[in-house]
Length: 275
Image (cartoon, rainbow, N blue to C red; front, side):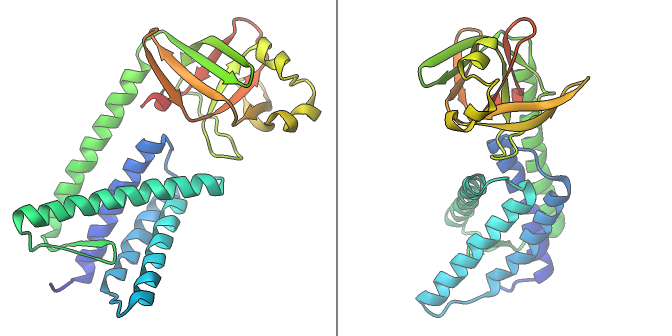
């Protein structure tokens, strides 16, 4: 099959657009505005790896390493994970999405004898008119966006939530508030923070004493309210569950911030964590 560079680059730009959007939904992470654009451009230009031909095992291995490195850079640009562990996990998810895409293309090729698909060096090329490719990607992106908004609206409905935090010998259940305004991110791990406003937890971990933070797995991150700015003790240890209407239980991957309560004790989480 003759490969046209312009179609190759445009098609892979569109594919990258869809894949990073899917990764954003899977990981509950916001795309970086400028980095998102750069990741699409990088994914598009790096698709030219399809023209390389390996003559032996060493060359095949080198191309594979280059491709994995390309995926890693794409993820880094799109999300800018704050830790190596998070970058690694996001890249693994992204590789899985690429494998799924490859599987779909293989299925189409097998069942329909499609002569318009070429897959080489873990890169896909579609020999179809650009207008048709753009329509297909636009439709896919539209469906993903509608799904995301529908899931978000469902999670924002007036429902009774409870949050359970378990760490070592202590387990506490509090009424929980679903608040899309809680966009606090742990600057060390990149994880979203669920805030537990609880004097019981604050006193149990002796968070008035900063000398005990590190021995109990806590660190400080800055946060702000309408009237002030301060520091919040945050931990990545323990387990957090969200209970919806006393029936649906979901364990969420997050960091937990603990602050003193000035009134009713409760937890605050971003509803996107339930998507």
